[in-house]
Image (cartoon, rainbow, N blue to C red; front, side):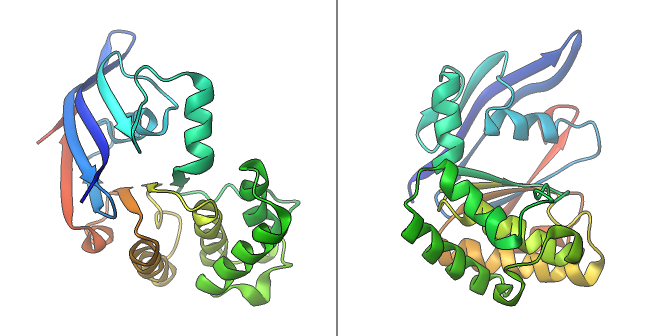
Length: 219
């Protein structure tokens, strides 16, 4: 399998507080990796470095072939439009747009032509079993339905990597299980590499391996 993500000896500090202390790992195409650790262990900072929100103080972060440590802001923005998506604990749907429009927006930003946008959104609504809710606004959807829309939106531009930050953390156990099964199915169907940050052992059951962080290091 081809390598999709590489983190080499990454350090990151905020002021005098060293948050990441020499983190290294890699992830192959279509691989699913869990990342666990207590609050304050550095998980969110590592995710921010992988998504290009933060840059490491030293070390290298490469994702989908782009070295984020030295990439321009424009290149990182292009990477997010094409190869990398993030699924959050909180759904971050635009409240004035329907489920269909929320999913379509990412395709508009990526410059996908209207006819293809329609086909992709229809396919994804069917994949997340929400075609009957296409015209619904987020406030009328349950938490599980909103997360399904968020997942469809994350998949719309056919990314190579998904960074999932506590994707079931804001759902009850039943809805969380459904979302977990959906992520498992869709990542396999579209051959997407996925890094899942979680506190839950149950969430990691869909992962091929699990990394554990403590005090800014993998242990």
